[in-house]
Length: 218
Image 1 (tube, rainbow, N blue to C red):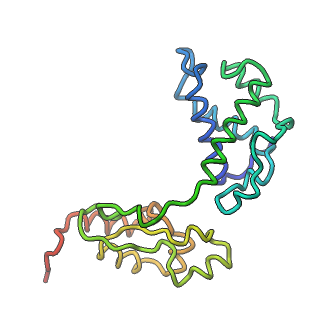
Image 2 (tube, rainbow, N blue to C red):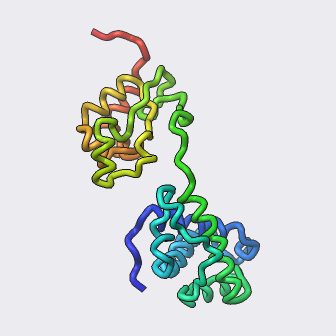
Image 3 (cartoon, rainbow, N blue to C red):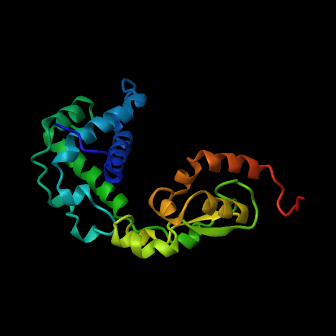
């Protein structure tokens, strides 16, 4: 069966599968290879994912009202390869057990992807998220406020994500706005991880980490 392109939802489903497999007594047997878990979970996810309803495959906090409850799904179209794999690994006794296992995975998945976003003010850190110095911090809107309306209109971000912030010291905050335009920040560099993926930010972070706070130079 052709695989779907990777999405955050598919990644969450794969993670939910892996957690359930790890929690299963059958997987704890000495003959199992925990190192093979990522590949096994990815295989099962790739087999089952395309057969799930679209509302499940696109589930999010914003669409939570339209997401069907897993216990209402028939799952009859689930490939037999899923049940065969689960039973052969001792994770369930038969096909019915495999579908029950899959429903539990789907319950976990829906809980994960439909969870409300964090209250961003409570994400405050004690160190700058760029240079890792424990210094006075400012909050950087990961999606610049000036582009909130545009981001919503063009579908770049869901409304609940517009308040996301990173906690940065003033020099790092200024540097971030100096290396990318507001639109680049909104469309490409809207996570700390994405910012830290830039070579110029990496170079700056190494420099800033060595600087003493409050020391004037020149």
